[in-house]
Image 1 (cartoon, rainbow, N blue to C red):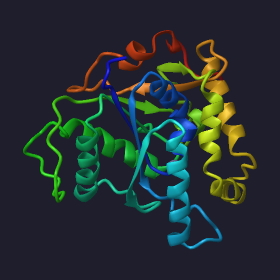
Image 2 (tube, rainbow, N blue to C red; image 1 turned 60 degrees about the horizontal axis):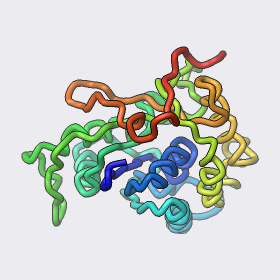
Image 3 (cartoon, helix red, strand yellow; image 1 turned 180 degrees about the vertical axis):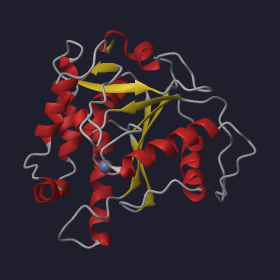
Image 4 (cartoon, rainbow, N blue to C red; image 1 turned 60 degrees about the vertical axis):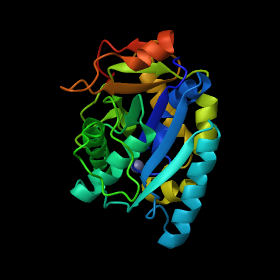
Length: 262
Ligand SMILES: [Zn+2]
């Protein structure tokens, strides 16, 4: 691992990173990477009982506690649930975040996902990673960070459940073995205590950790690991083509040859 490797994990809501990428983040932290975790919102709609101001305070504390477990920083961009919008104001905010972090590697949501906030976060992240190098792009921040020197390696996590909104599978291209970090991932997820009640009410999910393990098992089954997290790398024009995750984590990363099992 290079001495100053920096990783940015930008997801829409508190607990998304934990569900989708925390096992990989834990590996990277163990290897000495500087990890920044960020969410677009503080999860203001994540309660049927508490008002927005109260639940957002609780959820930001939960996210910070989770980040602390891998010695990551945590920042919230203070957008609102269901209102993560792809517009100039928000692109500037995300681009400023990317410039401040100056990451080698960025993890975010799949561009196709079950939830629009997730898809929009993915697009915002793509534009911010692409544009952070351009000195003529001004973010309007009070003390703006300098343009970065290179486009970061961008990876998309799996959509929750591995399917799009009409049930079509979205297979990952590579899997990271999280067998040695899944317990820590579970601890990070458990920091989001407020969401157990919410998910019970909203989605009939009684145990926050069960769907996480199911997803990890499904991804693992694609590449011969017991537990895994799946990703796809952004390989569009202008983005680095090297599989940095593979270079960093070696045998913990395997390519997925075929699609998702039925
Ligand atoms: Zn989410």
